[in-house]
Length: 344
View (cartoon, rainbow, N blue to C red):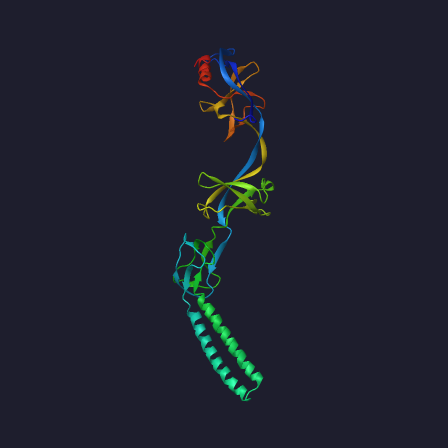
Protein backbone atom coordinates (compact mmCIF):
# COMPACT_ATOMS: atom_id res chain seq x y z
CA UNK A 1 0.00 0.00 0.00
CA UNK A 2 1.63 3.29 -1.05
CA UNK A 3 1.68 6.61 0.81
CA UNK A 4 -0.63 8.37 -1.65
CA UNK A 5 -3.30 5.70 -1.31
CA UNK A 6 -3.48 5.12 2.44
CA UNK A 7 -2.10 7.72 4.84
CA UNK A 8 -1.29 8.05 8.53
CA UNK A 9 0.23 4.60 8.97
CA UNK A 10 1.22 4.25 12.61
CA UNK A 11 1.64 1.67 15.30
CA UNK A 12 -0.55 2.29 18.35
CA UNK A 13 -1.86 0.42 21.37
CA UNK A 14 -5.57 -0.16 20.96
CA UNK A 15 -8.28 -1.30 23.32
CA UNK A 16 -10.17 -4.18 21.71
CA UNK A 17 -13.89 -3.71 22.29
CA UNK A 18 -16.39 -6.35 21.23
CA UNK A 19 -20.11 -5.84 21.48
CA UNK A 20 -22.17 -8.92 22.18
CA UNK A 21 -25.89 -9.71 22.25
CA UNK A 22 -27.30 -11.91 24.99
CA UNK A 23 -29.06 -14.93 23.58
CA UNK A 24 -32.48 -16.08 24.78
CA UNK A 25 -32.97 -12.97 26.90
CA UNK A 26 -35.79 -10.47 26.89
CA UNK A 27 -33.45 -7.61 27.86
CA UNK A 28 -30.25 -6.85 25.92
CA UNK A 29 -27.11 -6.73 27.97
CA UNK A 30 -24.91 -3.61 27.78
CA UNK A 31 -21.81 -3.64 25.53
CA UNK A 32 -18.94 -5.60 26.99
CA UNK A 33 -15.31 -4.76 26.44
CA UNK A 34 -12.49 -7.21 26.74
CA UNK A 35 -10.35 -4.41 28.12
CA UNK A 36 -7.34 -5.99 26.45
CA UNK A 37 -4.78 -3.76 24.80
CA UNK A 38 -3.32 -4.93 21.47
CA UNK A 39 -0.72 -3.46 19.15
CA UNK A 40 -1.74 -2.75 15.55
CA UNK A 41 -0.83 -0.69 12.50
CA UNK A 42 -3.50 1.90 11.78
CA UNK A 43 -4.16 3.66 8.46
CA UNK A 44 -6.59 6.36 7.40
CA UNK A 45 -8.55 5.68 4.20
CA UNK A 46 -9.21 8.51 1.74
CA UNK A 47 -10.86 8.92 -1.63
CA UNK A 48 -8.59 8.33 -4.59
CA UNK A 49 -9.04 8.49 -8.34
CA UNK A 50 -9.24 5.22 -10.26
CA UNK A 51 -9.72 4.68 -13.99
CA UNK A 52 -13.29 4.04 -15.07
CA UNK A 53 -13.32 0.95 -17.29
CA UNK A 54 -16.07 -0.20 -19.66
CA UNK A 55 -15.74 -3.86 -20.68
CA UNK A 56 -17.37 -5.40 -23.72
CA UNK A 57 -16.83 -8.48 -25.87
CA UNK A 58 -15.62 -8.60 -29.45
CA UNK A 59 -14.24 -10.83 -32.16
CA UNK A 60 -10.97 -10.73 -34.12
CA UNK A 61 -11.34 -10.21 -37.85
CA UNK A 62 -9.07 -9.40 -40.75
CA UNK A 63 -9.05 -5.93 -42.23
CA UNK A 64 -8.14 -7.50 -45.57
CA UNK A 65 -10.65 -10.23 -46.44
CA UNK A 66 -10.57 -11.41 -50.06
CA UNK A 67 -13.14 -13.52 -51.90
CA UNK A 68 -11.42 -15.45 -54.69
CA UNK A 69 -13.57 -16.16 -57.77
CA UNK A 70 -12.95 -17.61 -61.20
CA UNK A 71 -12.70 -15.26 -64.17
CA UNK A 72 -13.85 -17.96 -66.57
CA UNK A 73 -16.68 -20.48 -66.54
CA UNK A 74 -15.93 -24.15 -66.17
CA UNK A 75 -15.92 -27.14 -63.91
CA UNK A 76 -13.48 -27.16 -61.01
CA UNK A 77 -10.77 -29.65 -61.87
CA UNK A 78 -8.66 -29.39 -58.70
CA UNK A 79 -8.59 -27.50 -55.37
CA UNK A 80 -5.14 -27.31 -53.79
CA UNK A 81 -6.05 -25.85 -50.38
CA UNK A 82 -8.50 -26.33 -47.52
CA UNK A 83 -9.70 -24.29 -44.56
CA UNK A 84 -6.90 -23.36 -42.17
CA UNK A 85 -4.09 -23.53 -44.74
CA UNK A 86 -1.58 -20.71 -44.91
CA UNK A 87 -0.80 -19.60 -48.45
CA UNK A 88 1.73 -17.24 -49.97
CA UNK A 89 1.24 -14.82 -52.82
CA UNK A 90 1.37 -16.73 -56.10
CA UNK A 91 0.43 -20.15 -54.68
CA UNK A 92 -2.09 -22.11 -56.76
CA UNK A 93 -5.51 -22.27 -55.10
CA UNK A 94 -7.68 -24.13 -57.64
CA UNK A 95 -7.76 -25.18 -61.30
CA UNK A 96 -10.70 -24.70 -63.69
CA UNK A 97 -11.17 -27.02 -66.69
CA UNK A 98 -10.95 -24.38 -69.49
CA UNK A 99 -12.92 -26.10 -72.27
CA UNK A 100 -14.64 -22.94 -73.52
CA UNK A 101 -11.51 -20.81 -73.16
CA UNK A 102 -9.45 -23.35 -75.12
CA UNK A 103 -11.98 -23.45 -77.96
CA UNK A 104 -12.08 -19.66 -78.05
CA UNK A 105 -8.28 -19.57 -78.33
CA UNK A 106 -8.25 -22.08 -81.19
CA UNK A 107 -10.87 -20.06 -83.07
CA UNK A 108 -8.90 -16.84 -82.50
CA UNK A 109 -5.70 -18.43 -83.78
CA UNK A 110 -7.50 -19.65 -86.92
CA UNK A 111 -8.87 -16.17 -87.56
CA UNK A 112 -5.40 -14.71 -87.06
CA UNK A 113 -3.87 -17.15 -89.56
CA UNK A 114 -6.52 -16.19 -92.12
CA UNK A 115 -5.99 -12.46 -91.49
CA UNK A 116 -2.20 -12.85 -91.81
CA UNK A 117 -2.57 -14.59 -95.19
CA UNK A 118 -4.88 -11.81 -96.44
CA UNK A 119 -2.40 -9.18 -95.22
CA UNK A 120 0.49 -10.78 -97.12
CA UNK A 121 -1.60 -11.06 -100.27
CA UNK A 122 -2.75 -7.43 -100.10
CA UNK A 123 0.83 -6.31 -99.59
CA UNK A 124 1.69 -7.79 -102.99
CA UNK A 125 -1.41 -6.31 -104.55
CA UNK A 126 -0.64 -2.89 -103.09
CA UNK A 127 2.91 -3.07 -104.47
CA UNK A 128 1.45 -3.76 -107.94
CA UNK A 129 -1.12 -1.01 -107.40
CA UNK A 130 -3.89 -3.59 -107.84
CA UNK A 131 -5.63 -2.37 -104.68
CA UNK A 132 -5.93 1.00 -103.08
CA UNK A 133 -4.25 2.07 -99.86
CA UNK A 134 -7.68 2.23 -98.19
CA UNK A 135 -8.40 -1.42 -99.03
CA UNK A 136 -5.00 -2.46 -97.70
CA UNK A 137 -5.56 -0.53 -94.44
CA UNK A 138 -8.85 -2.40 -93.86
CA UNK A 139 -7.12 -5.75 -94.24
CA UNK A 140 -4.29 -4.63 -91.95
CA UNK A 141 -6.81 -3.52 -89.31
CA UNK A 142 -8.54 -6.90 -89.45
CA UNK A 143 -5.18 -8.58 -88.88
CA UNK A 144 -4.46 -6.40 -85.86
CA UNK A 145 -7.91 -7.16 -84.40
CA UNK A 146 -7.37 -10.89 -84.90
CA UNK A 147 -3.99 -10.66 -83.22
CA UNK A 148 -5.53 -8.85 -80.24
CA UNK A 149 -8.22 -11.53 -79.90
CA UNK A 150 -5.56 -14.24 -79.73
CA UNK A 151 -3.80 -12.40 -76.90
CA UNK A 152 -7.13 -11.98 -75.12
CA UNK A 153 -7.95 -15.69 -75.51
CA UNK A 154 -4.51 -16.65 -74.20
CA UNK A 155 -5.08 -14.46 -71.14
CA UNK A 156 -8.45 -16.10 -70.54
CA UNK A 157 -6.83 -19.52 -70.73
CA UNK A 158 -4.22 -18.49 -68.16
CA UNK A 159 -7.05 -17.79 -65.72
CA UNK A 160 -7.70 -21.53 -65.52
CA UNK A 161 -5.17 -21.70 -62.68
CA UNK A 162 -6.19 -19.28 -59.92
CA UNK A 163 -3.41 -18.12 -57.59
CA UNK A 164 -3.36 -16.32 -54.23
CA UNK A 165 -3.10 -12.53 -54.69
CA UNK A 166 -1.65 -12.03 -51.17
CA UNK A 167 -0.25 -13.96 -48.23
CA UNK A 168 -3.10 -15.14 -46.03
CA UNK A 169 -5.13 -17.81 -44.31
CA UNK A 170 -7.83 -19.85 -46.02
CA UNK A 171 -10.98 -19.33 -43.92
CA UNK A 172 -13.67 -20.55 -46.33
CA UNK A 173 -13.96 -23.09 -49.16
CA UNK A 174 -17.37 -22.66 -50.74
CA UNK A 175 -17.11 -25.13 -53.66
CA UNK A 176 -15.66 -28.57 -54.32
CA UNK A 177 -14.07 -30.44 -57.20
CA UNK A 178 -16.66 -31.02 -59.92
CA UNK A 179 -18.73 -27.93 -59.14
CA UNK A 180 -19.36 -25.47 -61.95
CA UNK A 181 -17.50 -22.22 -61.38
CA UNK A 182 -18.64 -18.95 -62.87
CA UNK A 183 -17.35 -15.36 -62.70
CA UNK A 184 -18.40 -13.53 -59.53
CA UNK A 185 -19.15 -16.66 -57.48
CA UNK A 186 -16.70 -16.93 -54.50
CA UNK A 187 -14.82 -20.23 -54.26
CA UNK A 188 -12.07 -19.49 -51.70
CA UNK A 189 -11.98 -16.76 -49.01
CA UNK A 190 -8.61 -15.51 -47.69
CA UNK A 191 -7.81 -13.31 -44.71
CA UNK A 192 -4.57 -11.38 -44.33
CA UNK A 193 -3.07 -12.15 -40.87
CA UNK A 194 -0.91 -9.03 -40.96
CA UNK A 195 -3.91 -6.69 -40.78
CA UNK A 196 -6.08 -7.85 -37.87
CA UNK A 197 -8.83 -5.93 -36.10
CA UNK A 198 -11.06 -6.35 -33.09
CA UNK A 199 -14.70 -5.54 -33.81
CA UNK A 200 -16.91 -4.85 -30.82
CA UNK A 201 -20.19 -3.09 -30.08
CA UNK A 202 -20.42 -0.32 -27.51
CA UNK A 203 -23.51 0.81 -25.61
CA UNK A 204 -24.84 4.28 -26.41
CA UNK A 205 -24.20 5.18 -22.75
CA UNK A 206 -20.41 5.02 -23.25
CA UNK A 207 -19.89 5.78 -26.95
CA UNK A 208 -19.32 9.51 -26.31
CA UNK A 209 -16.26 8.63 -24.19
CA UNK A 210 -14.57 6.57 -26.94
CA UNK A 211 -12.65 8.30 -29.73
CA UNK A 212 -10.39 7.35 -32.61
CA UNK A 213 -6.80 6.95 -31.43
CA UNK A 214 -7.76 5.96 -27.87
CA UNK A 215 -6.02 2.96 -26.31
CA UNK A 216 -7.88 -0.09 -25.02
CA UNK A 217 -6.81 -3.28 -23.28
CA UNK A 218 -7.51 -6.55 -25.11
CA UNK A 219 -7.70 -9.85 -23.26
CA UNK A 220 -7.65 -13.09 -25.25
CA UNK A 221 -7.84 -16.70 -24.09
CA UNK A 222 -4.25 -16.47 -22.85
CA UNK A 223 -3.61 -14.72 -19.51
CA UNK A 224 -1.49 -12.01 -21.11
CA UNK A 225 -3.21 -8.86 -22.35
CA UNK A 226 -2.24 -6.45 -25.12
CA UNK A 227 -2.94 -2.87 -26.12
CA UNK A 228 -4.97 -1.90 -29.19
CA UNK A 229 -5.81 1.45 -30.76
CA UNK A 230 -9.30 2.57 -31.73
CA UNK A 231 -9.21 2.90 -35.50
CA UNK A 232 -12.84 3.63 -36.29
CA UNK A 233 -16.03 4.50 -34.42
CA UNK A 234 -19.08 4.00 -36.61
CA UNK A 235 -21.32 6.97 -35.89
CA UNK A 236 -24.62 5.19 -36.64
CA UNK A 237 -25.99 2.69 -34.13
CA UNK A 238 -27.47 -0.67 -35.00
CA UNK A 239 -31.25 -0.30 -35.22
CA UNK A 240 -31.91 -3.51 -33.31
CA UNK A 241 -29.34 -3.46 -30.50
CA UNK A 242 -28.84 0.36 -30.40
CA UNK A 243 -25.09 -0.25 -30.08
CA UNK A 244 -22.22 1.28 -32.01
CA UNK A 245 -19.58 -0.66 -33.93
CA UNK A 246 -16.00 0.10 -32.89
CA UNK A 247 -12.92 -1.26 -34.66
CA UNK A 248 -9.48 -1.50 -33.04
CA UNK A 249 -6.15 -2.34 -34.65
CA UNK A 250 -4.06 -5.17 -33.21
CA UNK A 251 -0.32 -5.76 -33.22
CA UNK A 252 0.95 -8.69 -35.30
CA UNK A 253 1.31 -11.81 -33.13
CA UNK A 254 1.50 -15.49 -34.06
CA UNK A 255 -1.04 -16.52 -31.43
CA UNK A 256 -3.77 -14.20 -32.77
CA UNK A 257 -6.16 -15.65 -35.33
CA UNK A 258 -9.35 -14.39 -36.99
CA UNK A 259 -12.51 -15.54 -35.25
CA UNK A 260 -11.03 -15.57 -31.74
CA UNK A 261 -13.04 -14.14 -28.86
CA UNK A 262 -11.67 -10.95 -27.30
CA UNK A 263 -12.58 -8.97 -24.20
CA UNK A 264 -12.16 -5.22 -24.75
CA UNK A 265 -11.62 -2.84 -21.82
CA UNK A 266 -12.12 0.84 -22.70
CA UNK A 267 -10.82 3.55 -20.34
CA UNK A 268 -13.66 6.06 -20.17
CA UNK A 269 -12.46 8.48 -17.49
CA UNK A 270 -11.90 8.36 -13.74
CA UNK A 271 -13.97 7.66 -10.63
CA UNK A 272 -13.59 8.04 -6.85
CA UNK A 273 -13.15 5.02 -4.62
CA UNK A 274 -11.80 3.91 -1.24
CA UNK A 275 -8.95 1.40 -1.18
CA UNK A 276 -7.81 -0.86 1.66
CA UNK A 277 -4.97 -3.39 1.86
CA UNK A 278 -5.89 -7.08 1.53
CA UNK A 279 -4.26 -7.74 4.93
CA UNK A 280 -6.90 -5.58 6.64
CA UNK A 281 -9.80 -7.77 5.50
CA UNK A 282 -11.32 -10.34 7.85
CA UNK A 283 -13.48 -13.17 6.50
CA UNK A 284 -15.88 -14.74 8.97
CA UNK A 285 -18.82 -17.08 8.36
CA UNK A 286 -19.11 -15.98 4.76
CA UNK A 287 -19.07 -12.30 5.69
CA UNK A 288 -16.34 -9.73 5.13
CA UNK A 289 -15.31 -6.99 7.50
CA UNK A 290 -12.53 -4.76 8.84
CA UNK A 291 -11.53 -3.40 12.24
CA UNK A 292 -12.39 0.30 12.49
CA UNK A 293 -10.62 2.44 15.12
CA UNK A 294 -12.77 5.09 16.82
CA UNK A 295 -11.60 8.38 18.30
CA UNK A 296 -10.84 6.71 21.66
CA UNK A 297 -8.61 4.08 20.11
CA UNK A 298 -11.15 1.27 20.48
CA UNK A 299 -11.51 -1.38 17.75
CA UNK A 300 -14.92 -2.18 16.26
CA UNK A 301 -15.54 -4.98 13.79
CA UNK A 302 -17.57 -3.66 10.85
CA UNK A 303 -18.99 -5.45 7.83
CA UNK A 304 -18.01 -4.05 4.41
CA UNK A 305 -18.85 -4.81 0.79
CA UNK A 306 -15.79 -5.10 -1.41
CA UNK A 307 -15.25 -4.21 -5.04
CA UNK A 308 -12.56 -5.24 -7.52
CA UNK A 309 -9.02 -5.99 -6.40
CA UNK A 310 -6.09 -4.06 -7.89
CA UNK A 311 -2.34 -4.05 -7.46
CA UNK A 312 -2.65 -1.14 -5.01
CA UNK A 313 -5.38 -2.73 -2.89
CA UNK A 314 -9.04 -3.72 -2.76
CA UNK A 315 -11.90 -1.34 -3.46
CA UNK A 316 -14.58 -0.81 -0.80
CA UNK A 317 -18.05 -0.46 -2.29
CA UNK A 318 -19.85 0.11 1.03
CA UNK A 319 -19.21 0.13 4.75
CA UNK A 320 -16.44 2.75 5.09
CA UNK A 321 -16.27 6.52 4.76
CA UNK A 322 -13.51 8.91 3.80
CA UNK A 323 -11.22 9.71 6.74
CA UNK A 324 -11.99 6.65 8.85
CA UNK A 325 -9.16 4.70 10.44
CA UNK A 326 -8.79 0.94 10.17
CA UNK A 327 -6.29 -1.73 11.19
CA UNK A 328 -3.93 -2.15 8.25
CA UNK A 329 -2.91 -5.70 9.08
CA UNK A 330 -5.06 -8.01 11.18
CA UNK A 331 -2.90 -10.26 13.35
CA UNK A 332 -3.85 -13.52 15.08
CA UNK A 333 -3.53 -11.67 18.40
CA UNK A 334 -6.38 -9.35 17.43
CA UNK A 335 -8.61 -12.19 16.25
CA UNK A 336 -7.92 -14.38 19.30
CA UNK A 337 -8.52 -11.47 21.67
CA UNK A 338 -11.89 -10.90 20.09
CA UNK A 339 -12.82 -14.54 20.50
CA UNK A 340 -11.96 -14.39 24.21
CA UNK A 341 -13.87 -11.15 24.69
CA UNK A 342 -16.89 -12.47 22.87
CA UNK A 343 -17.01 -15.61 24.91
CA UNK A 344 -16.48 -17.85 21.87
